[in-house]
Amino acid sequence: MFFVPSLQHMAYSTIAVALCNQTDMKAPFNELKTFHIDPYPKGLSDIIFGIVERAKQKINVLRIAEKLKPDLIIVLKSTVLQIFKWFRDHSDILEPDFDDRSSFYWKSKGTIGRVKTAEALAGREEAPLAMRLKFAMCYCLDKDALGLQTMAAMRMRLKFANWIYLEEDVLRLQRRCLPRMLLIRAELRYLNCTDWMRDWRKRLCLPRMDEKDLEVVFASRYAAETFLGLAALQLSSTHGELTAEIYVETGLGVLTWVTGHS
Image 1: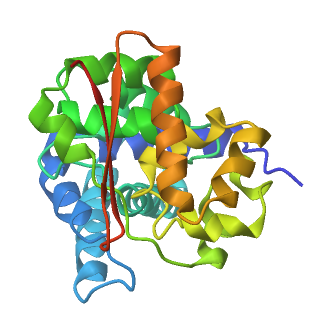
Image 2: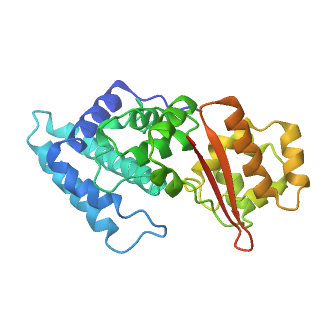
């Protein structure tokens, strides 16, 4: 059953978001952004408590009925936790000093719409190019990803090129990856997603594969290397302005994929 927010709840959420977006809240939220490792480190609850207390002081001076303030504070706490979870889940993409809050797309029920938020961040010209490109790739925003790729200097593209070590973690794969990946056989453990967000490169490539390509990948002794090769060749053939190169460090299992102008 879907949650349908009341008008009162939507009003509370609007106020809570406005309070969290105020200029003097930037520093505590930037501090919150650094606490993204699971399990939660010591001191996290103090930071969240400090943010909530600062926002509660702002609520106390608002011209609203006293009987409404307790419910508003409850929604405020939920809003702060939503922001923290978004920070935590995107920790490998975010730049610590960049203020992301104004790009959040808030749904009426008080949660962050992640795809629309990613689209907004990928399109923000004042945002760091590295972060914009990662968001575009992670959320399969093809147009943004290809446009930003051509803007990136070779030094930056090389920095983006590191792929994860080959490991097996099927449960995490099943929990975190795209629905497209869940339809594929368990052999995807060879293309393991050790962490959902750290795997932003494969998320762009995998939906481009058809069943024939996947059969070739899993028939190979070196499934991940074959996957990368097919993905890069497909990108280079689809987008003539791009040149795809594959670098495989044999023995280490470290894979590198670079796309860019030759």
